[in-house]
Amino acid sequence: MYRIGRCRCLVVAMAAFAFVAPVAAQPTDSNFIRSIQRRLEQLDATYRLTVPPDQPISERLLIDYGGSLRFGFVTSDDRAGATRILRQSDATLHLRMELDGAHRFLGRLRFRYDDFNSGRSFDGLGDEFQAPIGDRYWYQFDLRGAELARTGQHLDWNLNVKAGRQYVHWNSGLALSNVLYSGIVEAEAGDLGLVGLVGVTPRTETIDFDATRPNYDTAVDKRFYGGRLEYRGLAQHRPSFSVLVQRDHNDADQRVFATPIGDVTTRFRYDSEYFTLGSRGSLGPSWLYRAEINYQSGRGLSSPINPSDGFADTQSESDIDAWAGILTLTHLFYDERETRLELELAAGSGDADRGHPSNTLLGNRDGTDDHAFNGLGYLNTGLALSPAISNLIMARGGVRTTLVDNRRRAGHLQMSFDAFLLNKVDAASVISVPTRGNRFVGLEFDLGLEWRLANDVSVDLRYGIFLPGNAIPRAQRDPRHFLYLGVLYAF
Image (cartoon, rainbow, N blue to C red; front, side):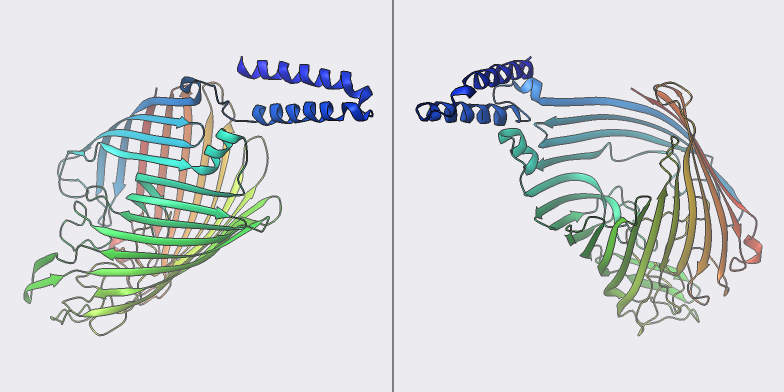
């Protein structure tokens, strides 16, 4: 009603202006005409306000709430050929609020229970409720949105702040893709954008890449500090440079391992920095791209056991000198099924004297630089094998499309298919799964189907099969399968 009233006032004012227009040439009426013009401009400026000044807060506040119930069934083959089965029950409740397009809040509660077959849990802890219950909650302030709501003016610069427990995907995610208690500040001025990050890992929802450290999946304390500078003055490209610093506050951890050569005391520390040069954008009307190269430096502790001969070794600080990169191309077909083709190439450096690419025990050898790339990042390397990027070169081709286009009713069906070619960068170096001295790791094919049975019920199917190559030991060359079937009810 408010906007309709404004429109009527504007029409009446314009009619009045048209009535006096014939006398506009007379000097005695010039002040009156300028006055009418100023009133019209003021009316128009007020009308442009996103939030009129007299609108009650009940009409300015957007509240969205709901939840979901999900049951998932997972089967996965390990390297010994044994099948692990998980039944997962998951319930979520969420609340989202937005005021004036400038203040946003999200809170989400999650209740999850994992039910494994006897003796087949992934972490050895058996069936259990997963913590935490409050897994996402953050507040965001957008200065440009606030000014647009207050005055109707679009600022040429902006400041956006987001703080709380949130998922942080830094750049392409190679170095960091994890939940953090964090604050992210994004400033924009002219053609430049600057992003700052300060965060700490939640102790109960982070899995460290070093599985030999005590409580590596229940008590992780890493701090992150990052900054990214982007140039936004190009129409089709957005180049950037960023620095991410990771500091390990688990360095007081110590563990004694019983080995054939006796008890071995192991200390843990891994501090790293990631320098990233990248760009994203479009290559013509149908192609999107993302390119990124990471250089990793830092310091870590070497292994107390020499990986090559199994004898005790001195633990000392080692310099980290590693790299990783990714190139992604996406072709948009602009058809009714929203079909797109994805091509991706990714690689990361490895270390020839490591017995494991990320662990401290049987990790980097004393007196040598550590060339294995490690971080708390995520990269899609397949469902069934899912190796880390260290010493891996991966080529992926995928397609996404809609098989049955029925978005407003039941029956909507979407499909995804990915093919992976996995090789080692250095045949003599290890990767995150056991291999021997060959380069070809294997092939994998993943299929995904999302089927909407009703407006609020959907079924999700994910299947992957890994076909081992010559780098996999002969005793482990049976195909490995991964299957996920989930039913989701949203309300």
